[in-house]
Image (cartoon, rainbow, N blue to C red):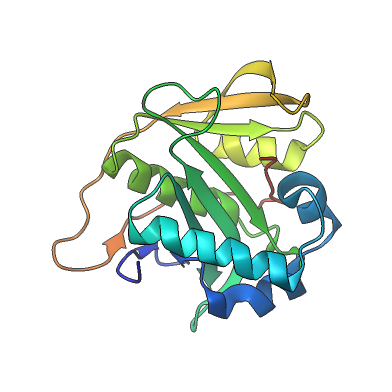
Length: 198
């Protein structure tokens, strides 16, 4: 698990871990609850979530959750996760969901993180990325478009919610030999907020 490290020189993605719980709980706000989490996080619930995340990393399971980190001594700025298997995904599709804590919004970090996980997902065998967005979540849709996703359709989910699907073909980029997976990502315009419904 700890060997997975994705970076573009500004954003570093590493697996979400127990040490991130306090920062996650402190950073959660109404937007993350509304668009990403489905309800306010509790310590017990977050600890259980991290245990499940760790298990998926240990056996390369279908859910891979990263902490989005930035700064000279990278601090947690949000999360981004990949779901290689979930209802309505077709063969080769991977779902991408992301959210930044309020202090880190407006800096282009979510778009950079999406670029990084797309390359990782392609190396793991995915051929198409899917970002599902509530139609009212314009900030998340803007991140998807800046990351090269195109609007596909509005889909009625099993939950009864209607979500806009954005799609992007994925292409693998080889990791540096013997080192962390480092990928240059072009400069992005600032992102007002970022989050994605799951």
